[in-house]
Figure 1 (tube, rainbow, N blue to C red):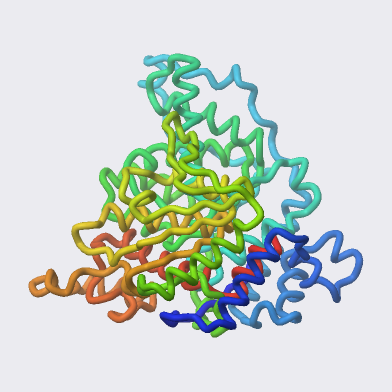
Figure 2: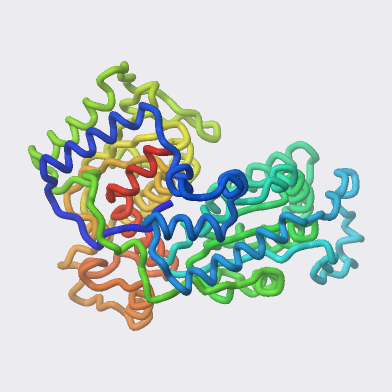
Amino acid sequence: MLLVQRSSLTAAGSPTRLATVVFLCRNYYSHAIPLREEALSKGTQSQLEYPTPDSRYHELVDSGYLRKDDHQDQIVSKLQGLHDRIARYNPPPVPPPASLKPKSLFSRLFATSGPPTPSRSQLNGLYLYGTVGTGKTMLMDLFYDTLPPSAASLGKRRVHFHAFMIDVHKRVHQKRVEHGWEGVEDVIAPVARDLAEEARILCFDEFQVTDIVDAMILRRLLECLLQYGVVSVMTSNRHPDDLYKNGIQRTSFLPAIDLIKRRFDVTDLNSHTDYRKIPHALAKVYFDPINYENKQALEDIWDTLTSHTKIKRNDTLNVWGHKLRIPESTSTGIARFTFDDLCGRPLGAADYIEITHKYNTVFVTDVPKLTLNQKDKARRFITLIDACYENHTRLFVLSEVPIHLIFSDDPSSLKDKPITDHMRSTMDDLGLTDDIVGSSSIFSGDEEVFAFARACSRLIQMGTKEWVEAVVRG
């Protein structure tokens, strides 16, 4: 994972850049050289067989893939410490299913509800938080890819938090249908048991809480997972104290926050370096404005990628019991949509995750400038960007405006709508300026401003030559 990025994109690409992308597109379907072999080419045989977070990090620094950073070096030391403890970890046994039957109404009414007492054999997790560009994804990659061999027998899982919660909701629904359980609380312990049996090491990207249902599930779920010996590493934009801030019935979620602070090493990733703003050459994947030149350039890339395969029209993808229409696609994992196909309809995270699992390359055309009356479309586009980024799906975009102007209000709607002090503070925390946000963000809540900033940053990073090459290498 490379944390390199430019702060802006030019509107038009040179023929050299277009040729570079076409070359990379062709290369995508040929043999790939793993990044690991190149980054560790100078390492010893033992390091190649059993890399650690510390050895991998310093090899990446020595090879020039990462920049030396003292603050990040300290974070890697924490990852190394957890790595070593996992190598010696002997978790408590997962309880049998029969012991997790829901309690009677009488038992629930008179039961005490204190936090579970951890056994001496259980390990504390790691909670890494920081703003955009602080290296969260790279550090998670570093940790997960270098887990000790013993982790295979324990079971390990790396998942974006969006996808994890979709999975949890599916499991909750299935348990309720199978056993006729009514209350959500009744179902959480058996669901947590199944998750623990599958993986004792869980790595969550982009941990966040945005609605009351997730908040209520997570409170009990985290307790059970920890009780069953699951070790978790989480990345988030926020300190635990700021999770689900101003959310409905937030007081009911406070015990979960206390649990995270007690059982996780809460670590601030923020330093003075934004790794994604280190200038590097760009691969042309984002085209604006919508004119003949850019349409033709994007069509040339599409033709190159699909020249040796048949294009299917109006194929369908089954997602949670409904059919999602795919206007154009190939058996080699390439699909093309208009913006309205993906964001003009009531689709959700599950739809976009399924698309990025099915297709390794996605084209999205006719992306407009999104204004105040298009909030729903903007949120869907952000979710699509996140899904593509997390699943390493290449995204080619043809847009009406440059990246930093996609999510902005129509200036005529802002005459009586100044940016609030609270929003200004959030922008300062993220390192955003009025030019980046546009005249004003079309979003109002803190979580949405974070999501907006992340989407802009990720779109820019996905346009770097290094990111495209990393995806090509697998």
